[in-house]
Amino acid sequence: MITEAAVLANVMDKTRQLTGMYLNLLKDTDMHKVFEIDGKKLNSAFWLMAHLSVTENFLLLRSIGGENVKIPWARQFGLGSVPPAEADCPPLDEIKAVFNDIHQKSIKHVATLESSSLDADNLIGFEFLGEKTVRSNIIHAIRHEGTHAGHLSWLCKLNGIKTI
Image (cartoon, rainbow, N blue to C red; front, side):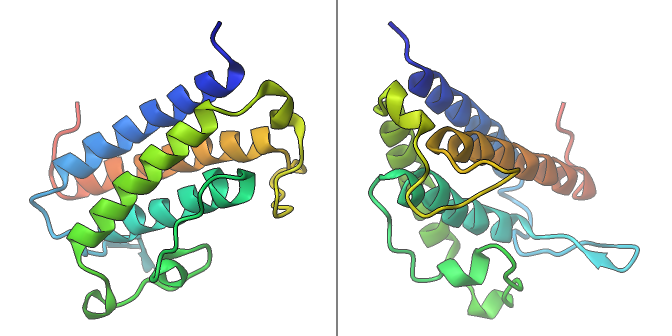
């Protein structure tokens, strides 16, 4: 029998595949390039990859009972952070390794959750749209990843990369 948690883990994994597709299309570009439109700076592909690592760790591991991964550069890429200068960033290979490691741990953890635990409040009281259950954290992580995948698709277009 397929559980709700297994379905949620699969949707998160499929959403990450979309993120990965866009990151792969951007691999030969300047990952630190910041585009500015009407005076507003967009996040770089590098920042988005690091940010998704930090937030997936927060939403799918730390807040719902998984193995929290210690990320030395987490504050540089968390919610509300100011993107650091390229010289102050960790190496891209380190970001990629953490990005992939946290995702694998997250998917494995989410897939093993009991249905009854999905209705429990998350462990840190994180609330979004009036909800703070384990289920709502997982759903928020999926939406969050998908939103940033869309940002990566814009970066592809701004770099002149055909996406379809």
